[in-house]
Image 1 (cartoon, helix red, strand yellow):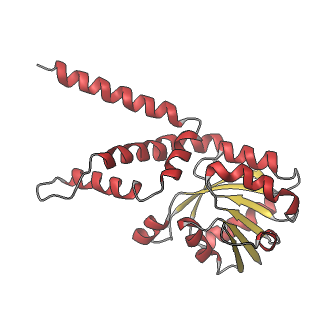
Image 2 (cartoon, rainbow, N blue to C red):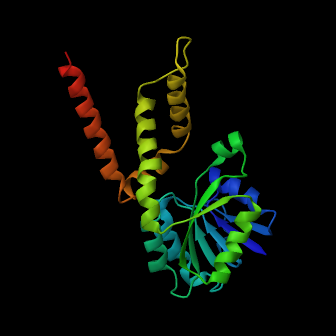
Image 3 (spheres, rainbow, N blue to C red):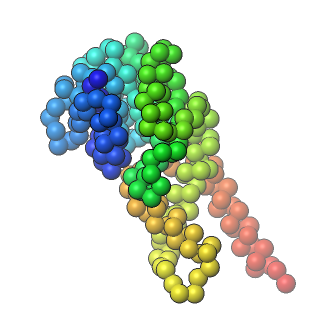
Length: 233
């Protein structure tokens, strides 16, 4: 089996390593001029930023083998799925995924037992089973969800956490001798979130249709809490 990967950032490098057990892996990024080679594959992973997914699909659509299963790994799903469906041929098989892990969490906890969200977009049951059999061999836990269900939940579990983490980053928090376990937990969130790129942060905030609402709820809650403190006797 031939597996193609477009995008070779930190997660792309991890995914390429994971895919080597299943077949020959061809990688394309901005530094390589092997686009035609990476499109002549059985399975193509688009591991590019959310903001680039639609343009990448537009670029590859006419060159892509019609039997190639296209899989994204964006951290939001509604807009990337819309982009893939609109720019790729109507006959092109598409599966949307979101691995709920990255290089840092795999380094700390290992790959086994990590979760991945899978959304059936435009594939047969056989094509979906083909991908899921690989994910099961990697010992990943598969969660099925529609793109909208995914984004609603991720607004809280990812966009909100990263919003908090970036805010903590500006406070310049450091390890200190007099500290509670709760403080150390805050430091862990700070370190993990601020190790990701700003591009990923803005993508998950701006392209998740439910992220703004949860940010506003948090800010309102904090303002109300501050008012309670100021008025407490």
